[in-house]
Image (cartoon, rainbow, N blue to C red; front, side, top):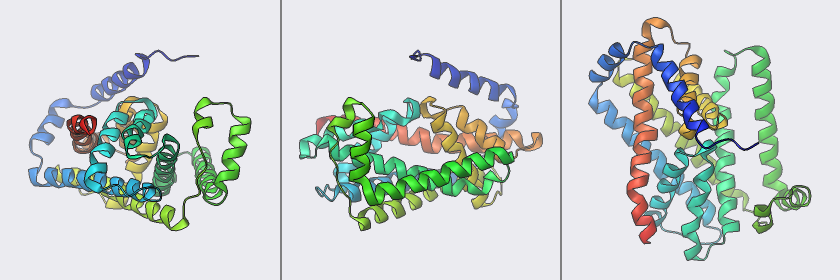
Length: 295
């Protein structure tokens, strides 16, 4: 069954509407008006650091075929992230491989690097979110733990036996796009380096939220914000809503165990953090898109 194009944005709007109906908007506006601008600037700096690190990660993965300068790859990466922010489940991020064709990199190889990027993202996010799993229903926690173990096991199998697994998938899954993918065994040190950079990049992303919470006067522990934010990002991705808008914010509020007394303040902090991360990265990406097209 094909999902109508208008349905997912409508769900996002409905979720945002529900959130706003539960929150004192006047109080939230007051919180935002009193935000520390220096800490807001720091949050934007953390976003820039995260984008730079994600570019370095992609640079590492691409380096086995060709060394691409950071200044050339950064606009492509950021424009790709901006495009994917407004696609269901970040599916359009794979389009960022198109400009690399002119550099002699095949779509097949470039797509494999994107696959490893997404795989590392999921493993790191699941790992960081583990501390909030104990706050959930035991049955839900058990399912999430099982998913995480399965995900790590799958990544390890891909790490060691990628060519065999790709051959098996091609044989049993009939998708035209798979026929274009050719196997490539990445060096272990390449994948390990990319994984480490992924972890640091997501720590920088959590730093965006930490600075945003401090900007409105909330003294939440960094690890608490990190785990709740990581889990809410996963919720946003699996919800298939564009940018995870609505579902991410709702999950974040829930996982922080927000009481009604501090709801406007916490929502203001989350909104500020999302503007500094999703908003800023999208604006920067779309601003760089003409440069990507030109090159």
